[in-house]
Length: 171
Image (cartoon, rainbow, N blue to C red; front, side, top):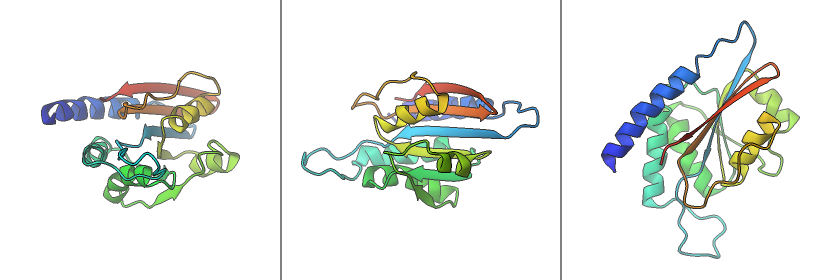
């Protein structure tokens, strides 16, 4: 698994760096990196707020390595343990606090204003992550993420009214 992670890390970092240097022609660029939380503990079906498994903790560290060279301005997470634990290594590495967002009010005018012209990481869930991507795109492009999938990386850039999107699969 270590060689696969190293390969994914190197190839993903190259794609991220290439994608994040798009010309803006003097306009503000807002860039969103959207991921789902890493693998959560599922042994107790009644626990609605589980922590990450050991594999999930490893994945959170891999995300930190992938995002090492991305100059984030803000990092958002829902208030669940699994999303916070996924975001924490990257936030600590970038010396940023994790800001909470309401998954029921994803792409509000306040959120748009707070993230305008910024580079932002948003850690969400199997439904909220593609929903947020769709809201930013203003069209239904992405479906909910399968329960066993934790390596989707959505990268969206907004320049004026133009939004470009890329989905990378890092499983």
